[in-house]
Length: 269
Image (tube, rainbow, N blue to C red; front, side, top):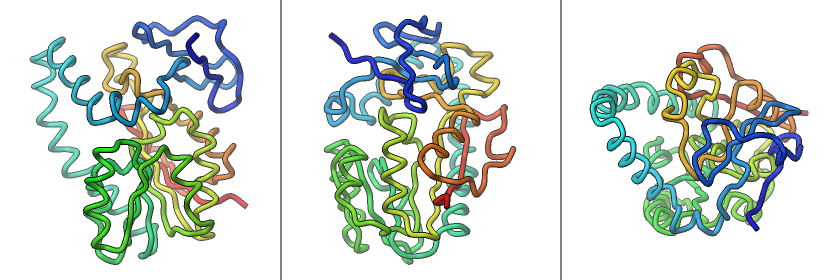
């Protein structure tokens, strides 16, 4: 019998609620009747994410399927989007880090091949947690020469191996949407953050107008590894439940015209 998870924010059991029309057999997306969180109710086991459903494989498969379904739209949108990402999003992360996180140890959860932290100034010591066997090895080769390291594990298992109050900053870009235990992970993140540390989060914006227009073809849907679909409200709810306070989450960080949201948080006291 497949596992059915409860709402990742409030713990409500929504198994008797109808699946949303965005679902894709056999994966069922539900909206919590209590708090409004949208999530995949029957996610894959975490062990599958280490290899057969590793991010780099599902991303490639999803891109292939989208190219097959809408080849002209896919090609027309890919080049401009890539250019914008190179110019704005990467610079936005670098700007967020250098303005909000002091030099020293910094942790990337879901670090993939380590490219994000490897691009930071040498004053930052990169550490990572990555569930994919293949990508964690790539990241380790990049972090080791700079005094850092990578733990190959899921987020909770990796964070459990790290000392309390260890990091000046935590990066979770394109990660929380993958985590079936997102609230527990954020609680564990709080434990390893220093008192003046900052957490940078980037997730797809389920409240975007593009999702409403494109429906099930919205770029934020990825089956089965996107398990959480956040709106500004539900993202704020989850951080609050984990004892984290908002430092920055202005309208420009969560525009309804954007498919992504950016947020900076700290320990709440």
